[in-house]
Image 1 (cartoon, rainbow, N blue to C red):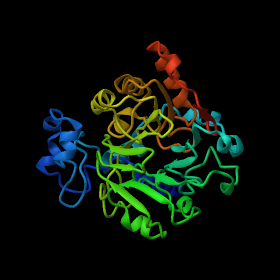
Image 2: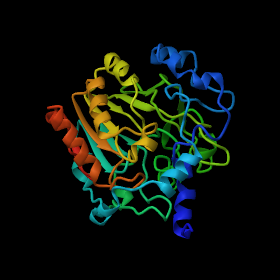
Image 3: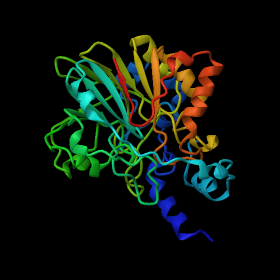
Length: 356
């Protein structure tokens, strides 16, 4: 018999697991990943091959997507090889002194928690995927925020990569001025309207927001999104961001993504100084490989992107896969050592700031 607590967890994470193949019948366009692989990312975007009749489509995922039966197999019948390590998971409160960050004249990047990052670019604050108050109660928060929100630089722009609850959190967004400018992929009108945030720029893949000093481009990635399991997945778009800063360096933010050949094209098209890659919830591999990169794929993505430096997010805060929350940076560092690329890996912890 399934315990009540476990049932609650399973229902809560239905909105954050790869069920893209079970909520609606697949169209021929959705089964054309092989054809899409012969096209450039810009061709795919220009032909809107990621646009379906009533929802968006991941053009980089072949048929045979994971479904609800696979989810049940994972949660109920698969062996968890990491369970004994859970006792070693640390709780690390996030304490940040924002004064030197605000005083810095150039570019800085602060890893706050989970996938939340604050970029300070020539006095302008860009906040990415802020989730400051935890998730559903059944998810333990291993990096609780222990600084006052009003002491941090208030965001001029909030970037949202996609609609999963660990990236788009209305409670966090509600603490900011509702006039704050939000940049997001297409969709999400009802989400932002419900909290009064109407100052928005909605981007399709390869669209850009330009304020005259910096440019923010939404790029494709190999993922999906869902906020309501009843309505089903992909009612809204998802993506990565490329930021051409006013300070000079170019920053790539992957958002959640599985590995795909598009990294090579992005690396050829843009000169990336810093890549911020999401690495977490990658085990068990048979279930997570269509949604998230593992450490070995992260190194490959870094090489494809030709980024000068990289650090990882999406780890340490919530256990969304089988691997313990503290394991991803250990595994990533090991893979960089194998590739003789350790000088390109920045081992940022929660609350750390990188200054340019």
